[in-house]
Image 1 (cartoon, rainbow, N blue to C red):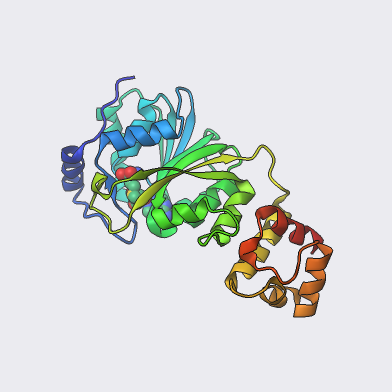
Image 2: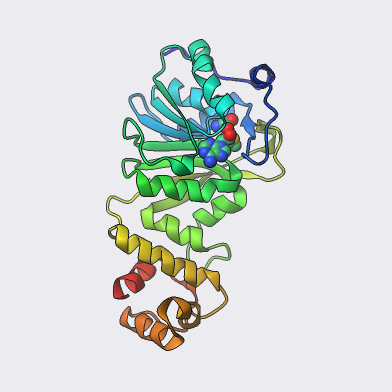
Length: 278
Ligand code: SAM
């Protein structure tokens, strides 16, 4: 398929045409470097015939890389000007590509066409974790993906129990599968240049999740309580959720977890055990 990628000049021309000044509120830092786009698509193992969902296509830099690899694309964009332009950009740069644009807040998306199997995105920084968890929760067809996020967030998503940056997002992400840091990205590949570093994070969904929706909800409530009071022992951190510290201790003992441990010491399997015992 013949596809042209966007470079710095095309990105600026498009922004000028649309009278777009990138906004911080929507995390609008556009990738202006074709090599970075190809690197993301390669690390994500996007292949011909894949069905990919992208959150926040912006002016289309990464979107064009995804279809260049032969995938079909569903792109969800909150900014009406950008969503409206994307089909026109594709008509010029990738006329044969299969593209569906959804103009909506990604957090509100409950249905997608095509049952995408991969998620590939340069996520808006301010909502990257909630948006990611929302898509993993609602779209089990998504089996793997690569997202570009702020470096701190990426290291948190991929952290193991006991590490300094391990927290609620790490434990929740682990419910869905395995996460890894898949590369770093220079600030210079963005326009405007952000004041934070970015990394690529890859994930593979486990073939079987630890349980059903009700169990996931209970597990996530326990994770929130455990990390809400990160420095406290579990028997104290879970006391409000359980009614009292004594009831929290009882629950933890039923689950076979030492009540004097802290949340940062537990992996997802232990959080699930507590939820099962509750
Ligand atoms: N993918 C493009 C690129 O790599 O150049 C743009 C990435 S930019 C970091 C993030 C994009 O997400 C912007 O286009 C922004 O408008 C969009 N966005 C921000 N919040 C969103 C939301 N809640 N739902 C969907 N898109 C959102």
